[in-house]
Image 1 (cartoon, rainbow, N blue to C red):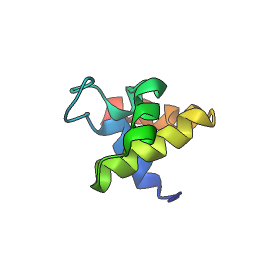
Image 2 (image 1 turned 90 degrees about the vertical axis):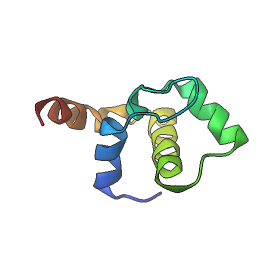
Image 3 (image 1 turned 180 degrees about the horizontal axis):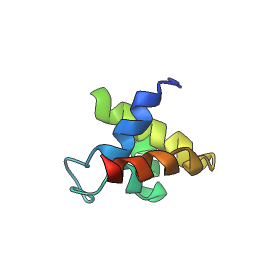
Length: 76
């Protein structure tokens, strides 16, 4: 997994562009939706990388990594 902190910032700031959760922040997507992508295939490009990273964060209980970024995103 890429350990680029910029991807975490983008996960918190980016809005899902399509699908059932269109308009929701990527960071707020439920694990069940991420598991569906894990089974069916993540989309190509940056969005897919963000979803895959978020999947790893959520299934490994690392959501605390996103909290300070969420807090900062409200201030910027």
